[in-house]
Amino acid sequence: MLLAESSLFELAVPCAVFGQGGEEATPPWYELTLCATAPGVQRAPGGLRLEAEQGIEALDAADLVIVPACLMNGYEPPAALLDALRAAHARGARIASLCSGAFVLAAAGLLDGREAATHWMYADELRRRHPRVDVNEHALYVDGGDILTSAGTAAAIDLCLHIVRGDYGTAAAAEVGRRMVVAPHREGDQTQYARPKPKRPASPATPTGKGLAAVLDWAVARLDRPLTVAELAARAGLGLRTFERHFAREVGATPLKWLNQQRVAQARVLLETTDLPVDSVAERSGLGAGDGLRQHFRRALGTTPAAYRRTFRGGGSRPSGA
Image (tube, rainbow, N blue to C red; front, side):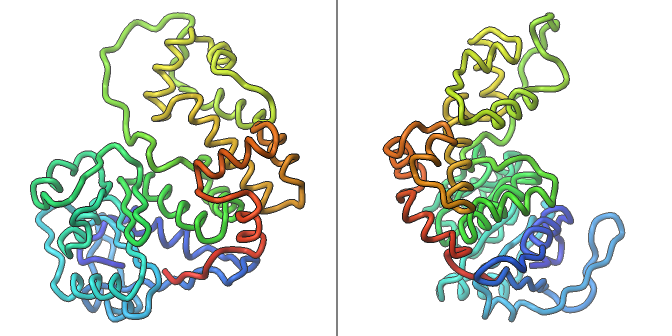
């Protein structure tokens, strides 16, 4: 969806994710259509000019509608767009907003009584304009099933890959992420940003400049081992409590929660791409035996490993248009 005033990054993200070739996917990959709220060439930041293939009538047949960020300079979405979004939602289409695109969904009344994410810089303004919206300025994205919202910039990638993951499975989303050269998937409840803290002089035991990326990569390569938080802290060269503070600030989750998320993600890939027995998948993912894997799947995904495999070994749960 090309708004009269769109942010280029959040417009490009869904084009990159849903427009990528997916010839190997079954059912077929998304059919991407870029539509505009107004006819003709639209001005974009940086002096660029954009023109969409279709108008908002394209929403009449879309299964998935992505609303990008709108520039926060008094933009008012046209009534025809709000009507089209309401109609698409009423007939069962999924609607997703990226960053300040949440203001468009809120103006259409689609976020009333719902939890919604947006860029943390705009959270107070969204509350002020639309007090019936439960604004979550901390989440990277919020999946409400039929309505999905994300924070800004990189979180737009997270949400779009989350949609692919739900439609086609973890392996397909990971492949798209690799093509885009983005980090492994982040859960929606991870924190958007780290609140600034007073600076302290760096000590020999405190890594500077590189963060925890190397430790995270090291752990992901060893998920089949019984990793402990103390072991990760030692790898980072930090005391346990200092490491936990750094981890929560940088990753937005506790080390144990993050490890379990990565283990479940690893199990999902193995279930999708191999014929390994459930016990072997659990062992290679570091989740113990099959019972442990089933408990984690039930808690994280609301399903069983066997049911998940049946769904995604066929290539996806449902075809979707974007």
